[in-house]
Amino acid sequence: DAGVTQSPTHLIKTRGQQVTLRCSPKSGHDTVSWYQQALGQGPQFIFQYYEEEERQRGNFPDRFSGHQYPNYSSELNVNALLLGDSALYLCASSGAGTSTQYFGPGTRLTVL
Amino acid sequence: GENVEQHPSTLSVQEGDSAVIKCTYSDSASNYFPWYKQELGKRPQLIIDIRSNVGEKKDQRIAVTLNKTAKHFSLHITETQPEDSAVYFCAAQHGSGNTGKLIFGQGTTLQVKP
Image 1 (tube, rainbow over the protein chains, first blue to last red):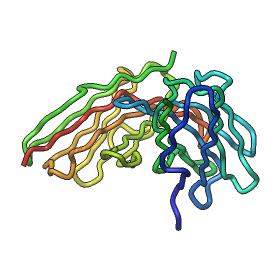
Image 2 (image 1 turned 30 degrees about the vertical axis):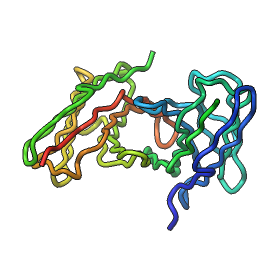
Image 3 (image 1 turned 45 degrees about the horizontal axis):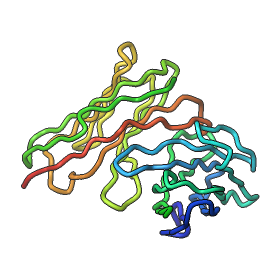
Image 4 (image 1 turned 45 degrees about the vertical axis):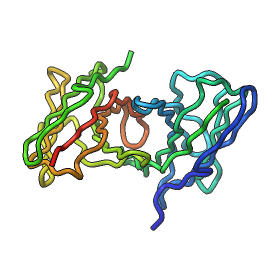
């Protein structure tokens, strides 16, 4: 049983570019949440997807958007990248009726 | 707004000693409190969690306590081992089932000296 997977592992972009990060949830899970973890900080909630809809959103600008597919996999898109967007982006999946969130290995994004 | 404060930010103990990490949350509607361990360059791994209708939970050397009145919860690690060295994060969730977002503390770097 595969756990949560993310791709790519690392990514280097320049300011102003856009990026797409991908996440496949744990088998049997239907909810995907995305978090941004700056160096030395705790993860910060970006948004959560369920049934292909954004269900909740944290305090992130509209440059951050997402999508969920019918197979529950999800994408995080960031437009007009800023230096401050450099971070580890984590996705977490959870199953119906459960609170436990399992994290993927993350994508390390560096914006130059 | 929703906030979780975590202390201490760093903790150094001798192997075999106990370690305690404390968190305080602001949203009284929070009802689920997980603890994650994150080793360098790795994903956060759930080590223990507790729900708001329970005051204490134990799993081998790890225990968590919750004081809803004070809005405090704590992680206790007994008989620490070098492999317990990592960053530990507490979190609080508001919402039922899988609808809640996790609000994380700032993390505690635990160093266990052999």
